[in-house]
Image 1 (cartoon, rainbow, N blue to C red):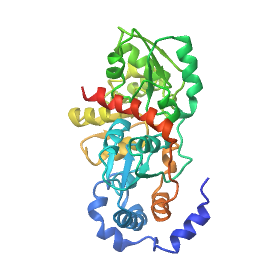
Image 2 (tube, rainbow, N blue to C red):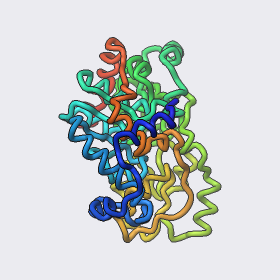
Image 3 (tube, rainbow, N blue to C red):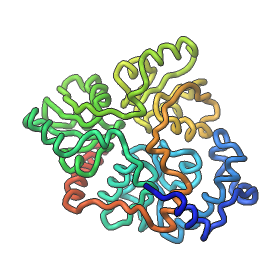
Image 4 (tube, rainbow, N blue to C red):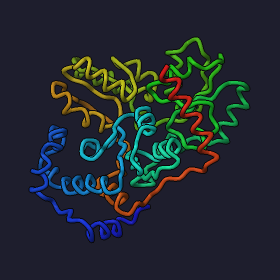
Amino acid sequence: MLDMLTLRATLAASYDLAPSAELAEATRDIHAKMDRVVPYADWVRYAPYVVAINDLKKKRNAAILAHNYMTPEIFHGVADVVGDSLQLAIEATRVEADVIVQCGVHFMAETSKILNPAKTVLIPDMDAGCSLAESINAENIAQMRAKYPGAPVVSYVNTTAEVKAASDVCCTSSNAAQIVRAMDSDVVIMTPDQYLAQNVANQVPEKTIVWWEGSCIVHERFTAKDLREFREWQPDTRIIAHPECPPDVVAEADFSGSTKGIIDYVAAEKPAKALLVTECSMASNIADVHPEVDFVGPCNMCPFMKKITLEKILWSLHTMGQEVTVDPVVSEKARLAVERMIELSAK
């Protein structure tokens, strides 16, 4: 766990991070990307960190990869590449910088390291974990293989390098159905998200899909009853759900798709009102791009994603701390599973 007192003392010795109206004015173009969801008074606090991080990125030859669940000041303020798990995995192979700072959870940083073994990969907080990644290990994969001999293992990218290495191919929520269809087997093992597997099973009825019983703490909490009650209250709202939600929740939605799929759907449909049944920062990060859409209703926050802050990003770049490493033998096997996913996704 990070020692925040030491962290702040280290930063205070090298940077003036006091709220600054002057820096806020100088970075109004950046704030304009998020002014619908980040009040100017908050931007006065954030601007010194954003300026310091963006300056330090140049000195370190670093690139920041940020997931869509990052808060707006990170997503719009300092990120060089943004996207869902698949987009970040693909872009990680294209990054030319010497240093990658992964603003997401730990398995994402491991994936970047797997795809870039010669680069330095940092994560601002090592405790940014994932309930899905922590729900399964390589021994569990072996148990599933023993139970279903000959069935290929398709593992969600929300897994550790160890689990990726024990799998045949990875998938994300955006390409899971495509990957499963591509498997040369009537029976396919999906791990670790039981709800993604069940939703894919509905999309790919020609396959028998069996799954590990893991779930995402953000998406498992939504219920079909919640959505029905919300629709009664706001009947003109478009309900858009992530496929990590339980199948009965997905069945109540007007559309279900990956993080990128949700963004594309909102851009194409431009509903007057939209309820995003996913992590809270999703709506915040696309609100200013779609001012015509009123994002309403409940969401669930990922406590792991929210461990990544501007303060921790600056500290990580300043100290080059929190480096992510992967055993080379594990990395090589895991890379094959990730690269196969990218290859199949491109077809």
